[in-house]
Image 1 (cartoon, rainbow, N blue to C red):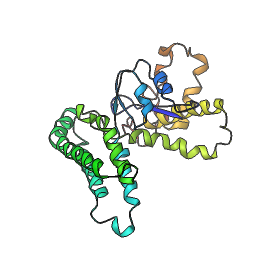
Image 2 (image 1 turned 135 degrees about the vertical axis):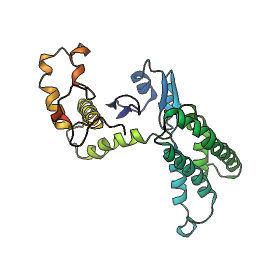
Image 3 (image 1 turned 45 degrees about the horizontal axis):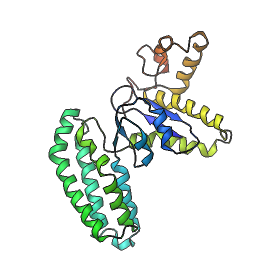
Image 4 (image 1 turned 30 degrees about the horizontal axis):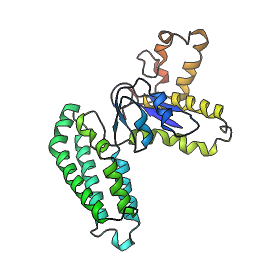
Length: 260
């Protein structure tokens, strides 16, 4: 199951698409005509998307150091080590970002230049030094290699204050599907998976726009037989972010679409 979703700007949109494999051609086809930043993990298949500028995920980079730390004996995990040094660089980047969360994109970009860029420069020197003295297939070596291989996408968040430093927004969106599929005995065919993708796209997008999914789906399906689905203008008022949606489809306590 492939997942595509919007960022902070504009209405929240979550799209699931079933494909029979993980080849980058599926992402390339889905994103035909796309131009802009594409936040993602380190999967090489995204490089096939023409026009996309890849933005790396610091949560994935940090995870490699966390996993390497778990390989140390219990007593050594809290003590000084090269693994903990690498982890602290990642933690510093995240600490800075938490302080910038409520700033405007322009303000966030300016602070990143003065605070995050020097940390990244120091981290890059540290990674190169570790590569010369660390076994490539060791847990630390794998964390170092990931960081160096992904360095350009990982530092791209410096270019634009709208960019986030991790792909957690998409990670959270795929979890409901991953959790539920263990119980979906009927979704064992391509058509079933495609139907699940459509249903999840509707439900998760509705939730992210502050709607009550069951009420929204009922409201959505009742008038559809009388609408021309080939004409986008005929159902624009039914989209999850439409300002004309009735009050009863909104989730309790949700005055406006959610942004996170």
